[in-house]
Length: 223
Image 1 (cartoon, rainbow, N blue to C red):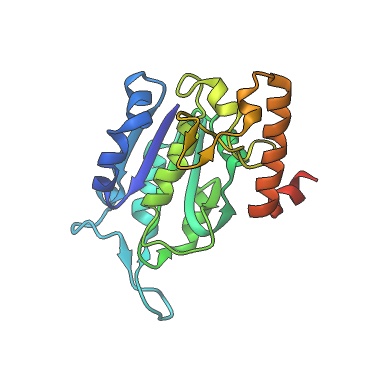
Image 2: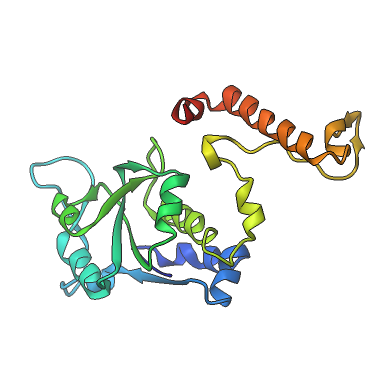
């Protein structure tokens, strides 16, 4: 998989690409992640990428030309172009799994007051990571990239992925490790029993309990 990220602040991705699982996935050549400053695609001498909103209003709006030029230069036949914007479809694990099967993704990170509306004509999908506002699309770009890359075969073990939150619209079950007792808090006896069928049943019931307590909306989707 290849992921191209269009941003005005490429330095924000330095740590993201050079630590932990993302770094290892890149080193194993399971994914290639390229960071592009779309200011480099501006046709103007001063590399301008934004201007005042027509009709008045606060802030600055990202212009068509630099972004169209960047996407047209990078796009291939198998490319999915994604605009990161509060008006997009809310991101979830199901969408992450779907995108993990793509061969080439372009993530467009916004900034300032937003995009010229005409930029939407050159993208395939708009995504929001939640109902709140950030200063730019770089953090959403990292979040989406991370959630996709970890699902690529070979990045994380299949067994680890099977028991994660949001599989089957349920949160993950509680996990424990040594010591068996810590400050009066003991690991549930069922987990020490060695009876795998009962352990599986306990964990499934715990998933339902935690989901009902914390994310009942997921149970409604499951129904």
